[in-house]
Image (cartoon, rainbow, N blue to C red; front, side):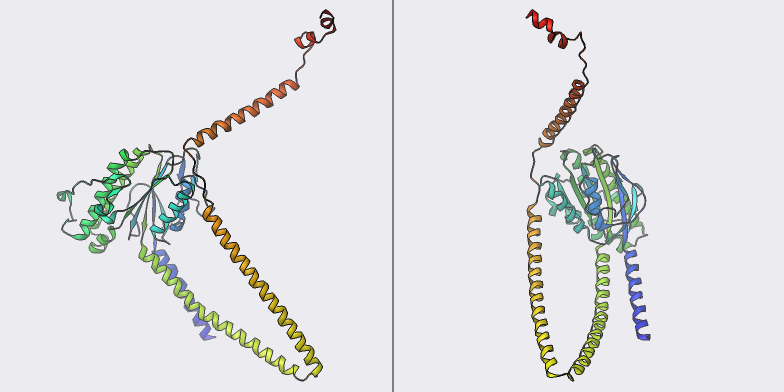
Length: 407
């Protein structure tokens, strides 16, 4: 009893540690701008694995997981955002952004996984969307000719810096990323041409964490870095609102990949520790069953040879039946696996057709013409059914006997 009690207490302790690590891995999800057709309300926590559903729903896509998060509501499905601009800030837990609607974020996956899932969701419908992911940590040389065209960041004015310095590698990388954000903001209004197709711009800031680790989160250098980042986010905010005439959803969120891996490792360790206990319980149950079978076998040995023959015949029939049932199970498993493979092939091939840009125009013309025609025909039928010609009408005069005699 004492050993089992200790094991239970140890499991409870592991659950507490896992929950504590999960709480520490929480971050921020901030909505910097959303059009009037998409409203964000409340302060409910959202998991990062659901961000792809939230952003896809804001663009008008069907949500695959319903009823999970109630922080978003669509008020006007005919004026949805034409683009989503997401800024992922790696290595930090919270964002000190004064503006925007803030939600607690449970970071349970890395940002690149979220990006890949969202990109695949849009590519299933149309392959002609603008889907851009820019990792600012790669630098201007690695980016080259981006989807927005050639980016030309302005030189950094070192005299405007208070605590950061271009002479330090961590500071220089962060300042270069901030300048790239400004360059993207300068290029966006002229390079972007809205075409009523949903677009995604995914920007990744990765050099803020080294600043916080080097100087401390409450240092003057860290506060200056956060101020520069907030200024760059404001510039991005204004530029994309101008480019899409306000019909754009702009968000920023934190992502600490190290803590995501830590949570997964703790969960796997728990599963590995729980597995031996389950195996031991299964061995004990199996041993008890074998002991009972041995006792039954010893009792059956006192019976007659005739009963032994009957028992052996029954056992052979049972084995034959079990062999048939095993073959049926194997056949069912093969059929099930073939069904799965067929379903996977269908899923891969069932992509929507590519339509021209004139398709929605022609569709709307035919739709509303059909609606007007049906209602007009219905009104004419009702009018004819309720018509009373009377004696003075042209119908009565044309059908009178006197007119027939005159003719």
